[in-house]
Image (tube, rainbow, N blue to C red; front, side):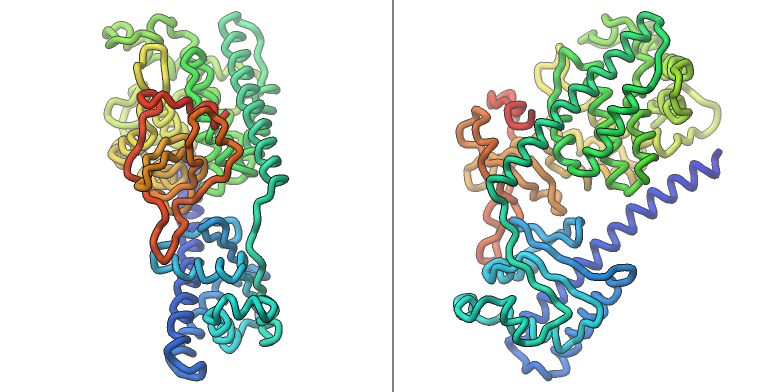
Length: 475
């Protein structure tokens, strides 16, 4: 068992770092292309220095072509993507992105057989004036005339009204799925209260759908975890924790069956709280020693309850028991060093973040997401696996979805998607503050003009103090 747990942790760590290495190589390729475009204006195309830059880029592309038929880059609204991976860009690449955009290039694909001569020709074309290029039929036609056969250029990607409608419909389905999940947890909890025979059929079905949804569009479902319905806290907390755990599992490239097991385990992690009286769960003040002892027993009760449910996995039992066994104050107490299962560690992290940002009846205001992230960062290596914390922060961003931002332009932006730059998400600019902006275009804080960012973050805004109903935009 210990060997299996070690193997699981090793696979997750390897998967995460493999993805980071891949993204790093993709960024290197674009940096090398940027260097070529700058130097082709200084040196003749046959100069040894320029050719050495082309050879380095060809070597990087060759490495990325291993096990691939092509190496594809796409530029969308100020962001750079390698296949489906968002690539972090900095100021050094901002001008290169603008060069592509001004020439109506939204995608560039490198194929096997690529030569240094083709790379040099591309660099020369990219430095021609956009107006001149457009008058001659555009850069794609020019590349064909130059016999650049192993590099494909594609026009800029447009988002039309039809696509926007599809996104809205997707959000509608996501909201329905969220509410279905809440109902499934309710049924399970009420069944335990009534000592009814329980089975996992409905909960498994909901979680499988959640996994499919997250794999298709992680941000859409994660955005709903910002909806803190205090009157349904017990149920919504379990669903939100499951969404966050599933999302982290996909971010770490777990296999789909393993993600589903993780999602169910997260959904049931707090099932033991059905044995804790509501007056203790909802108590606004400090718990007495006797009350705290009741709360500390819920992992044991949870494991016992889960073991009696028909069709439950062993992992759900283990996670229910282990999800609070982290840090010096962890419970239930155990003899010797405690080593949580990897999936229990993920659920613990998701549970902690969700609890920190939760809204309850007796809270005057919930903690801003960015503050919760900073707390998790402080607790890495103390309460939480540092590799998982790093992955979690990379996934949700410094400013998680649903965070209100004050921008240096004086505008207010609501975070709706993450980019690879943790400080520069995609935001919806709010002007009316009544929810009607949902149909308007989003902007990326990665967008540049003249090599400088158009917008930057000055700080966060408390939606309660500002009387802005974030639910109108995320529901």
